[in-house]
Image 1 (cartoon, rainbow, N blue to C red):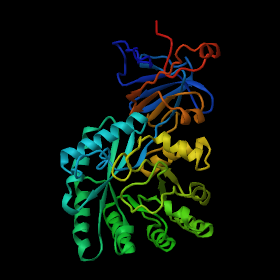
Image 2 (image 1 turned 90 degrees about the vertical axis):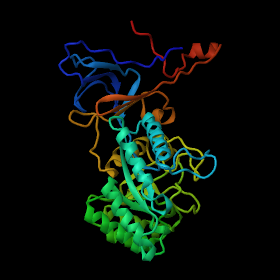
Image 3 (image 1 turned 180 degrees about the vertical axis):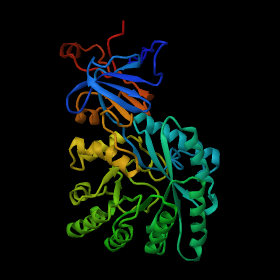
Image 4 (image 1 turned 135 degrees about the vertical axis):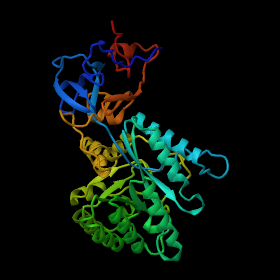
Length: 414
């Protein structure tokens, strides 16, 4: 059966702007049905259905909900898709580049048009994994925006000197973010202070792994991070859920006052931390305190998590079904909040905003988070990925009589 997902019509040869794209008949979360014209990587106009004329290529989005595209704020491309590897995991440059690229494309197909990948440096691998991830970033340009976080193992004491030198070298190579795992260093506070100092001197954001189960350590981190620009992110902070409520609330208030963003991992933890009884960060408590909370995927079919879809909408679904968030709040955690954590501009389906969009078959956000099968992904104003699903009920008179929905099916075009 041929793919019945809507395809863009070819524009006339006299088109004034070959980059223009017209999204027709899309439904927005407020219930409106609109046409959206994209040009030059931005949303040029939004109007009522049928109101935007022009010679742009067209994509029929009838039956689709149009949303700001998600972003992936916490990936591990260097180890992704390695759970079934025979023997020790290879950190050869070609192998890491392949894993990173394959994982990024998988996440792009789900809708993430930007992602941040944490990359371990040091030990016997040295800077090889960082070189591989940066090569993947270059090969993916135009499809998705990938940034790399340098994650050294040790930064304090005599053993940390090499890690510090390698961290600075990684930034010179092209790592855009300074990160690490202070919980695993003999001196977590010293580790954090070193990362913040390197970030300040290089003008880089900070993104640290921490379980968040030590309130004194979180308080020190918040005190050191306050005012640092371009910003500090921590995660997955599952340990906050294991603290007494008053202690966790105080820690959340301190993080909010310092402007620290928390990235939770509803789909599972990541291998950068020792597993200490997995629980997702207390998202509602953090949001109530004023902390910006984003959601990421974490480990993706590696030794720390043999399963995983790398699907931002699954993270939002889990926050709505188990984290106590409304569907809109859950989606914002993978879109608006995630983009903010990555230092990216906000996206709205309004004129002037970046054309980073996701169209999902469905008419309500809650339904989309439940059954998000067919998707069209738009990055920098052009379609970069499509997923089409078809659901049929075989030999069922009941299905025909009730006119049950069939995913991905539409009337053939004339």
